Amino acid sequence: MDLSTLVTLTTGVTLLTCVLAVVGVHTYASGRAQRAALVERLSSAGQIPDTGRRRRFRNLDRRLRRTGFGRKLELRLLATGLDVTPGEFVAYMLAVIAALWLIGQAVLAPFFGPIAGLAGVWAALLFLNWQRQKRIERFINQLPELARILANATQAGLALRTAIGMAAEELEAPAGQELGKVSDQLAIGHSMEDALGELADRLPSRELVVLVTTLVLSNRAGGQVVGALRNLTETLEERKETRREIRTQLSQVTMTSYAVPALGVGALFLMNGVRGGTLDRLTGSALGQVCVLVAFALYAVGFVLIRRMSRIDV
Image 1 (cartoon, helix red, strand yellow):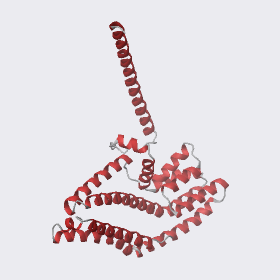
Image 2 (image 1 turned 135 degrees about the vertical axis):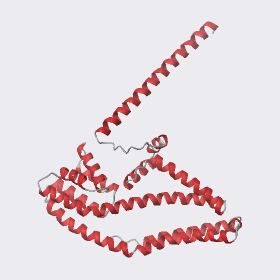
Image 3 (image 1 turned 180 degrees about the vertical axis):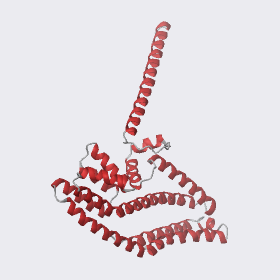
Image 4 (image 1 turned 30 degrees about the vertical axis):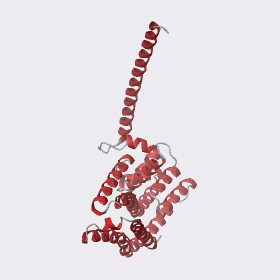
């Protein structure tokens, strides 16, 4: 291959590369413009709520949503009602884990750094579960009022879809938000069974399952939905009072379950505070490390057993 042919080939490849680069930039710019137009159109139609907050860690969030873990985490975050994306939650959790790791190493001993990091993961998951359970409890407390509104609306001759939309406007969060999602799904063509089934999956509880089953069967068979909702309202009111009494009686047991691991952690700080370097010497040998791990495992088993024994399903 002579020099002129090589120059011609190089020039052609360079021009082709420039053309492809221009086409790529144009495609990327048009894609961003289409995405912005779609977001603006959906926001104006009320499909996407405008929280007024700039989302962080978008790249991490985009990658997480493609994984099974990210999709499960997204569903759990939706159930909690927190205005946090999966990427933001994972980033914050990693920051907390790093901080606890460094604190455990600096305050106690280097051996306790990884343990403190694992405790951060456990605390993050426990926080999500606590938020989810709290939102479910609030939703359950609103179920009698929800059933009453649906009964009054259907008795007045309104369709069940219209009654759900009316309840979404009248009720406060979380019932109003969740029913708003159901109403939006019904408006875009989802069936009543699918929309209410997703609601029961987001906020699982026996009371909500009974209400969803009643609504679905009444809508499918065309039965007397008013009478069923009236009876369900009375039943939900009784269950609400029963759950409140049980929660009050078990409040001391619940505090005990959290006090047990807190005593173990407090004992570590006490030992290290009375005589500095005690934990360094304790975890300096394999036997001491095994003893510490066994102690933490026993505290964790005690916490789980107390929580299980104090759980009463109504």
